[in-house]
Length: 419
Image (cartoon, rainbow, N blue to C red; front, side, top):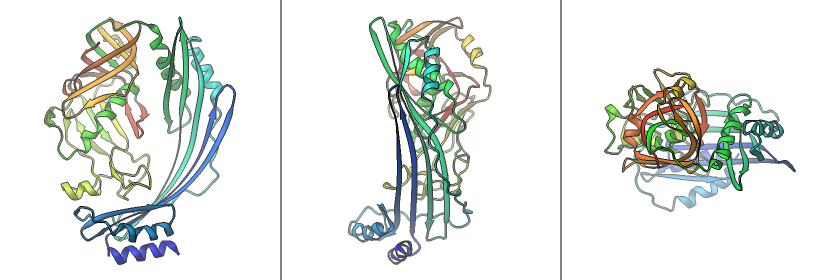
């Protein structure tokens, strides 16, 4: 068998220092618009291997085991930089049986329902132009020379909604990415798409240049994802004070136990506390980071594809606070400021320089009451002040794909500068 040949080849070249990864993927995508419906079915299979040879780490991938057997000798002609040996996961991590194979269901047809919700939410000012839903299933198998053999199966339903609006000769277009871990919930999708399409049509500039800043959960999740590389750095930027990283009420953790029992290297998944009571403490590590910096892997070796080697990255980030309040109570506490309802550009951060810049549309707030939509605003300043300035969080915890899930509720920052 090809798999046996692959094991024999790796053991001969790297006795006791190799890993084989195999992945199968199936997806059914349904694209819908007012005029058409199309379905696309995709199937993919890939193999990858890593091994130590001549004190260097090698990686190869192919669409089949036979292709990998042919690729390994060719790659071995190169001479990558030396790398420390790893403590590979072993059979002590109990294997998980793969979910029984069954036909992959087509995504539900939700175009008409979402179109109705969007029209109602926007009072007829926005229309759904296209909805793409994808149901996918992946099966992964990891084995290594230390005796590890694990299998992981998962399914997911995600999609993209595209909408457009027009008012007083002005037009606006926007899209919203979403992912459901349970039953489809279209109401939050309709609200987010409504805000992204209609708020830029208000033609009202920023009414204040400083004040409190309220961040909708998806906006707050984007900000958390933008600073997430800090949690994997061997040496954080100089401006970071571990004892006072952010507001004392904040705890940030990464916990993918609900998604998969192992990471992409076969290390068991566990909850890792990165920030507790405002203090930066934990760090995300994969096998490579553990070998170079000490400690053990935290189960964060992530494989975006079988074609590239795994690297350290978050898997499911969550921001929580000690005293979460209802969203309306958080809103009523705002004396004067802006509510960031939707981003109009990707968040820009310079982690080394301690700077951030966020462009958004939203609503102006005075004395806890919404005063009117704001076509566009920009908040910028020092990341350190932003993180330490969070004074409140709502109980409306939501997860957004970044592409890994990032969860947070509505956040309130005590002071921000706008233009």
